[in-house]
Image (cartoon, rainbow, N blue to C red):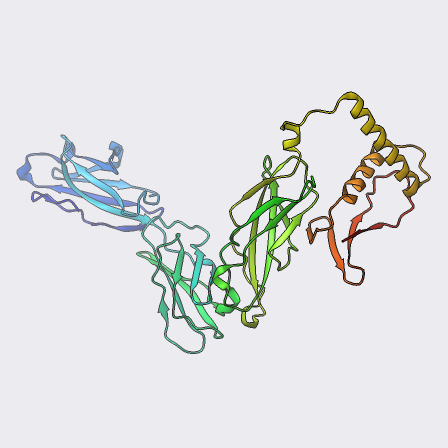
Length: 411
């Protein structure tokens, strides 16, 4: 608080008030200054207050009353200052206006290597208290042990990190205490075993590449989480991808525990962004589902088609184009006679269906595993790759084949 030997301090120095409260402050000057209280004015955070908020109590006393106070603009307090007519500061005080903390919620904890613990929480439904509020993460072994305070709050707000000295195979109790000058609150207690909340960094070394000249596929591979290389666990992976011009991600939930996968059903000549994340399941026999890591940084690759349209190869001459078209039509009608009957008209949808079938028939034998709309499996007895795909429902005639076709691609 600012002082002047000839000015009396406020009657309520540095008050702490709840939001919505009212405050009256009084500035008393000495008669030796030869100034009257009527000449004084007040400012709040540097802004001059309206004259109708002042009141002259005596020739040497001026008061100001503030109603329905809002939360402080800064946690260091709002500056309420009494000035003489020439702007000189006579006295001042910090006022703190806020609310008591609410019960912290959404307490979540995780470990990246079974030796540490990070926890994050929300400060309650209202969140901001407008005054300095202290949050302390506390933890202890459930059945014995001394209560401890987390000390590393250098990360994000409402988060704390315990780097070492944690036990496994033994449950912990974790909670958060919140307090300020207006009150205190405590979160619900969370009970956890370190092995049940293990997560990892995102999978490293994500690589996306083409699968030969196949226009609708990309190959994705990545590395295992390095922080858990010495632990026994079953990793699960998820992949998501999107086209360059789109913000919508498509997620593949069943990528399994391998570190490679092929994306199928993509659009030719298109740039795709791909991300991968990991869930370490069953560390040391834990039965809990595990916690997903963050997504890896995006890795980009394009499906074939761009280079051919912009490259140095020459366009087909009209005669060559017509020859190719006649050849494709001949193949199409042969396919239609073999695979369909009862068709009264030949629609473009039927032709498109044949084009899809033809492209899938040309897939190479070294495909190992496909993700997404189709799947492939090795048959040990015949050493063949079995391709399965659904019959499209928009063909306007009855197919002679069953609802699933089997295409054997021999090694």
